[in-house]
Each structure stands twice: as C-alpha cells, then as structure tokens.
Length: 239
Image (cartoon, rainbow, N blue to C red; front, top):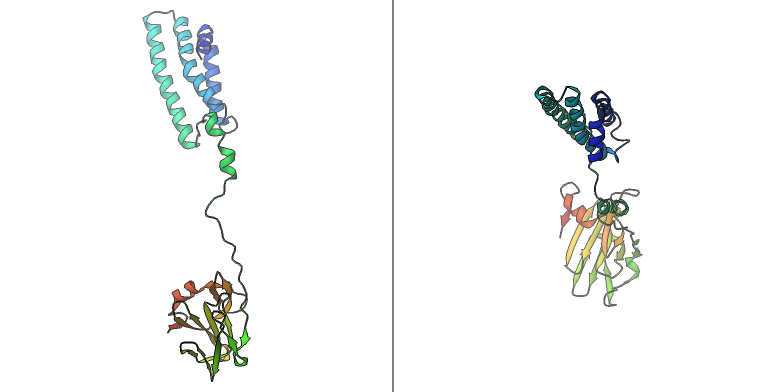
C-alpha cells in the first residue's frame, strides 16, 4: 500500500484520479463478482487518495493555497469514500473476508446435519384373534375367560361391551378389543390400569409398545397421546 501511495504521488493528479474513480466504479458495478478482491480495492482507495492529493498540491505549486486545496480534497474524498463503503456494506450485504482458519470450517458446516435427528416410525401390525376361541395372557400365561360381550382377566378385571376381535401388544402391556359393529376400539393399559374407549378410531399398529390409531384406512396414524388430546372432538370417554 505504501508503494501504491508513492506511485500515485509521483504521477500527475489527472492520471491518478481516474484510477481511483475506476476502482470505485468497480466496487459499485461488480461487488459480488470480485468479492475476494473487495478488501484490496478498498485499501487501494484509502491509500491511493493521499498520493493523488500530494500530486495535486505539487501541480498547484506547493504553496499554502496548494496545501489548503489538498486538505480540502482529503476532507471531501474521505467523506465520499466513507459513504461509499457504508452503502456497500448496508445496501449490498457486504460480507467481510474472514481468516483462512475460519474459512476452512465452511465445508464442515455445509455437510453438517441441521435440526434434530428424525425417527423412522415403523408400526407392528396388531395380531387380531377371535376371543371366543379362548385367549392366553402373554404376560403370565393364564387363560382369559370369555363372557357375553366381555373378557375376564386374572384379578377379576373385566373388559366388557366389546366385540369378538381382540389383540395384545407385542409385550402384553396393552389389551385391545374392537367395539361391537366396529364402532371403535377399547384399549386397556394394564401397567397403569387405565381403560380408554375410543369411538370412531381403529388400531393401526404398535410402536415401542404404544398404540397408534387412525380414523379410517389410508389416514396418517396418530399416537395415543395425540388422540387423547382431542377428547371433545372425538367423543372420548376414559374409564
């Protein structure tokens, strides 16, 4: 930059000034194409302006008037230069060139995953079986007694008001039975001893021992927690 200043100071001002104007025009017209060279061009303008002003005062005779004109030119020139840089930074989103160590991290950032890791949910289809043919509890191997419209488990737990098609979750935590005429399903959480009567819903499958349900075939299944969040809309009653 010092050599650049000396070069412009040694040239006539009417040669140096067009060079600076050409550099400023490049910043205005091609800021994105020459983004790697923008810092160098800016420094060339800052350091070149004193050289042109020194050439101007030498052409004016080097007296007090010449130095006054040079100082006035410095005030005007640096004011215009500051305005040009501010306009480039704000109007065109100038991005300062970072160091080599920071730039080397961009390939890693571009290849890094964004957002949380997604889970692929694969439902295990329910194994429906006719309850009137006799059931075996997968938890303890005991027999489940079938009664008229209901089922009796060990401990005198009764699930009634359901149809003949029933199923257990893969580990046996849940017992599910279809309502009469397939009006919905009854789910019994045996671990918490909670029973859910879900009219208008059908069981799609199990995911991590949890039931997933849908209104009809072809719809996206919902977890039971999502279904229970709309009890007014879905006419849900919990026993």
